[in-house]
Image (cartoon, rainbow, N blue to C red; front, side, top):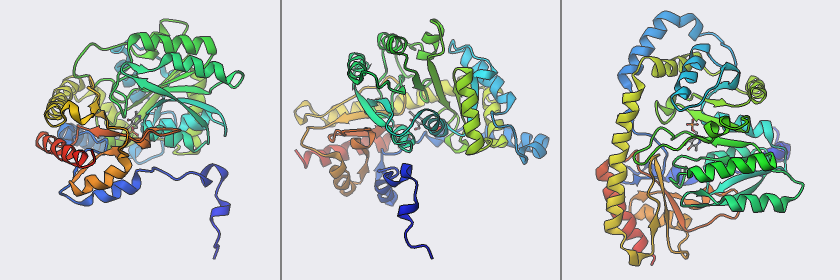
Length: 404
Ligand SMILES: Cc1ncc(COP(=O)(O)O)c(C=O)c1O
């Protein structure tokens, strides 16, 4: 029997500890706990009848091809539907600019493999999506974090840090401009343009992750960085999308868009990991885009999540008076908001305390690629019911008061 496995693991994996929040999530099995921790869309918004009908029809019509291997880049019906879907957002792409992925997370993993050598610089927001950190971390980059402000990352700081690096050019800048996970912050038009200016000036690609873009509850839609880039020379942005939040996460399908050379290489990487995304899953997404009347569905999702967000924000006003020294973002969309506590409170420790109050959140330290801040928490407002959300805020307030 081989005893020493550790020394055999690849250098990329030796220092990789996996998702740090996995251990915390294991504590959430108590049904009394109201969890604001996960990033789950509500099953109330799942198109269950549409899925049943599409599934029945496709299995009747296409069982042979559904049960077979299929092409690696993605089903052409789905790619065509995606081209149409993006057109409504003023993005013009053709088939050579699209690869279907097995979810947004898969897209992130492929991009990490495509671009990062150990020690390469990757620029990310502070805080940013933990799943992206984990996906990129497997290639052992050095993260440079840029602080988030009310209207997106501090673009001046981007410029300053790039200048400081001198000849070491970052591989890419990873951003989530719309209702960012975890902060809920939306990047202003001015900052989107300024980030593109930096991309052009310093020749650094942008990865624009857009899982929540259609889930806007108030305010005006801001053009995507991809669209803004297409109005210039183009070819500076790789867009990352998923069906998880609008349709359902269980189906594990997403897509990336970008310059054709990048897409071709991404498809090569897919050859080496999942090969093809299951045809059945892709067909369900094609049905979502072509048969399930998705625009009214998205409008319904907006109304539903807006109400939950409002309940959450109103209850926060009531139970977190200014003297508590707690502040929080007021997102215009998405599924998350970001709470900042007085600096002496470490939210990782507070998580265990919150278990006693039967409420859960994700400690903010999870969302940093380097030098984590400790006094923040990510709140998800899409999954719990409105009643649970209001109760969770009360419990959180009591828990935090016990530490003031
Ligand atoms: C910013 C961001 N990117 C990507 C993903 C990945 O989503 P999925 O793998 O479900 O498509 C998520 C999921 O929460 C996310 O918040």
